[in-house]
Length: 618
Figure 1 (cartoon, rainbow, N blue to C red):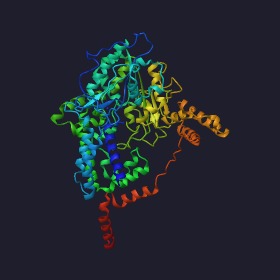
Figure 2: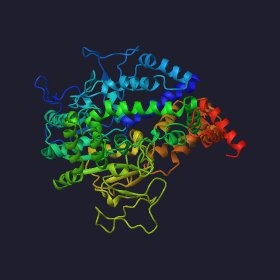
Figure 3: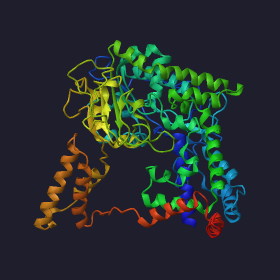
Figure 4: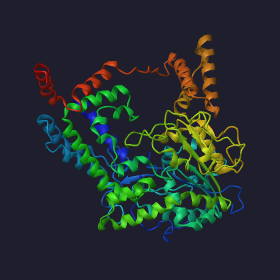
């Protein structure tokens, strides 16, 4: 029972965190520190503006900046191992959680009613996410430290480089761009969107000052796309500073997850779905674990569980999310007015409404502002991902094409696509909304995406079945990015056969790890048969990672073969994929069909009632 309860708690907290963060770190001050006169920004290069390279500013995605917990004196709070503690997406203090929740949870479990459990869970959510709260001016009130890099990647300490590489592994993908021309802008994902945008503008000026260049490249990633939207709207003069913009899975029109959360369309608050598919479709659990938790949820009456979930979500949304203008920037434009009416219509929310409406206008003008970049001769590229189902937190999860966190319409700037698991009709003709060249075929080979409807049909690269949160592990996307920020040889999706417009999603981590292990194998100690297989398996793995256009299943096949021969040497473990338990599947379904969403304690009475009805013929 203890193990089951821990699993339930972990999954529910995970869901709540995803609801707050997905889309798919807070901000201490509205004053810009990049123009602080006490900070001297000396030139870090001697190339002036005659260098063949352009300085590049990375605007990372959600949670890809170090936002750390501080004490009342503004010093880092360290864990028991002496490590700094992240404040994103929450500051989880297990002793405090146990203190607040154990007694109400056990009492509610024993009494089979809400004996303070819902209030305790709301208190836990408030305690964990409270560090990311903002006031009515959308200024963070939590005690946090945002680590900033006022210098190039070249000048970062090894620890700072490690933080950056954890999010974007530059060290794995060498680039011709000198590292003293590469900058990593940090921000708080729960912070004030207008302030962060002002900081971004000032940061760009700082980079120009340090490098002596008049123009830079800008790389907005995921949530970073919302700051690019605001930058081009609030500071149109910044276009004079830009050479190239490379969007990577940008949330230009937010994420429907946030839109659904802000409009109250949350799947797991529907108990019928919670007990019958939610966990299995979540995409974070194997089917057996999902079914075990689905069954274990019945240790409480459904009314108690749903009341607790509703209070927890209400606390998270109303106390944390709706006061963060950066969270509002992740709300799709199509949901904004409804969500604003729901949460921002009272006088006390006037400042937040004014700020979010300002960004809403930037969101509506996004395409026009990007066209203005093109009109000024600025190169604009984009990377989008599709055909991976949306995480099923929001109610519209199964009605769109997505990359698990952000819907395709947002990341692709309006490309048309069939829904997940479907293809475009056989007689479908590309819309050519933004492409008039009759020689261009912008329909994906799998007949899922019509890229001609996207704003940038000739400069947007698409990756099939790539998960948003694993983008940094797709080596081809990183290679495209490194090539684009270093050189101008690629002008469109037809420039380099290594990088076609439509490609396959991939995660190279396992193969790279296996190949690293293989380097230590003494082939002389192997039998002739094993040595031959080892060489063939290594070659297949190397060919796979070196080929930027492999087919579906190529990585799995290479991983399986190399793992098998390494396992013979005791250097790897073959993990057999477990088939979903038929018993668990049938038991969960039987419980739902016979008892609906009722808890175990309610089942005896329901059983007696059903027997009585059967005997009496009712």
